[in-house]
Length: 263
Image (cartoon, rainbow, N blue to C red; front, side, top):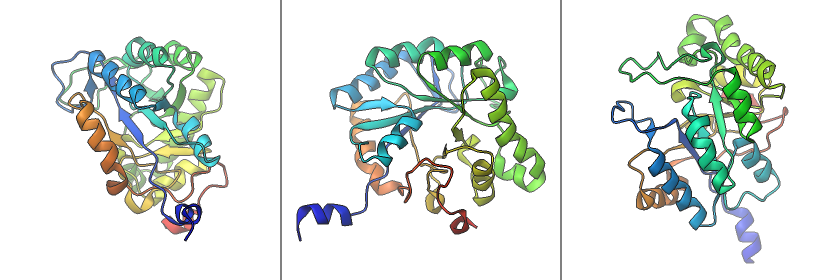
């Protein structure tokens, strides 16, 4: 069988999307969501040294739809911490990278009160979101206030609509640009939540390990933390196709995958 035909028949590996949260020096990190600026800079160098380029989810999916995603890595930042603008953005721009930051319009200028063990970290306010967008970063929604949407779907379906649709409207009011991306708080997702995100007008969404729900509305991601040296990153990259299921449909369009398969 010709090699070109064989390549078309083989399953495509899932896109590599890295999940970050906070970029700061913080000895107190009970949830392991903080990467120091020095470690983050080394991780970006690791990407560049291997001919890889960090991009937003929007750019990654657009490239994948056109068959040109080779060498691209999605970079995502959950929770919308203020240090994304102060620390991550300058390092990203130094490498010519972009990223997607998922913000919480119901907690603008507040802190991560949902993390019971702390430490408290400030979140982006309206001005910070606009400045991040002006720096070329994609702004996505993380819901309004960082709540478990699966639990919310059980208790308050109208609240689920607010967390998805209204959060998008608020961010668009801030930036003046369409908001295409969503990220599920805590990574928890089911078919109802995926449907709510799609119906709210998003074009793509990130999860963590959605398994059979994997699609352009539930993209799997790889956690990257302070312990991830070049050796660990190499191992994670090699293992990713074995541990994650890639979406069958990578076209970021309103007419995305049929949610009947998720019911």
